[in-house]
Amino acid sequence: MIPASAPVHRPLDARLLFVSRSGDLEHRPRSDFVRLLRPGDLVVANDAATLPASLTGTHLPSGRCIEVRLAGRRTLDPSQVDRFCAVVFGAGDFRTRTEDRPMPPALIPGDTLALGELRATVERQLDHPRLVSLYFHGSPEEIWAGFARHGKPIQYAHVPQPLALYDTWSAIAANPAAFEPPSAGFVLSWATVAALAARGVKFATLTHAAGLSSTGDPRLDSRLPLDEPYNIPAVTAEAIRQVRSRGDRIVAIGTTVVRALEDAAWAKGNIAAGPGLARLKLGPETRLRVIDALLSGTHENGTSHHELLRAFVPDPLLRQIDERLETCGYRTHEFGDSVLIERAD
Image 1: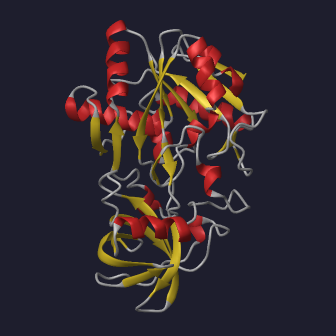
Image 2: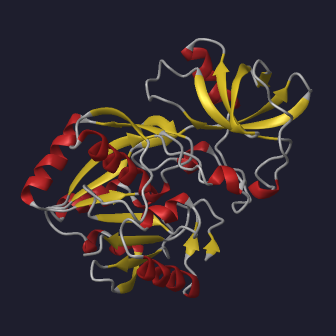
Image 3: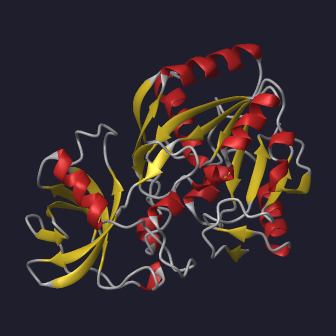
């Protein structure tokens, strides 16, 4: 597949590979997405706005330059913004491939990091030299202001130009929660939402703190996705209950929606409104309880996003999907093309 290198949410030539529940593959323009849905379906999207989660600064004990990429927190409560887990790199920026980024200086508990106007203390290392728990000093208002003034979107080398924060927000972005964009939602515009309603398709949202897609280290990547907080509004929980009672379908926009709803069903037995912390990792052994179809970006084999697709289709079909995406030159990464996968029979 070809990395999408331009930060355009809805390019006119965007493509969609439709995978029916019977395993048939069909190439469509992505603008056909709404036509492939059924009246009575419920589409659920992630309304998380992307945080400026890349913070450059100095490791004060050594005086060396570092980049901190915020990677996780325990809650979406905006008043509890002082503790994060983070992936830390040595000097450099997104123009260097993540796999080639240098290690940070040795990080030990008590080390202070100067990140613009913010100060953060290393609380502990999380079983990897790059992964640490950080405590940010200051009031919630000061910390949020520091992120806004000093932070930048997390970015990778396949997009050569620096991203503006708005490049990483979908049209429905609301709550500042995601560490990387829930980019499947880039397909959405308010015109799309109106078209869903005209077709008799319901639309609802939740908030999920989409985490990092890559750390550049295979051992650390194998731990992805990390625990990720989410919140399901009461109106969304009720819409899901009604759709399930009718026997209609629930269609997720993005893997983050799948993880949030399947985790909620796994943890509580039903989809209840309120906060949660997604710990469930989905794969071939997962029995999906909620989601019937998934609109997603195209994902490379070996990533946690690709592993999640194994919950929807058997491995031979997934290999066929991968081959078709590769041979037909689909674009990958957050600004790339899409797949719509119906859960296999």
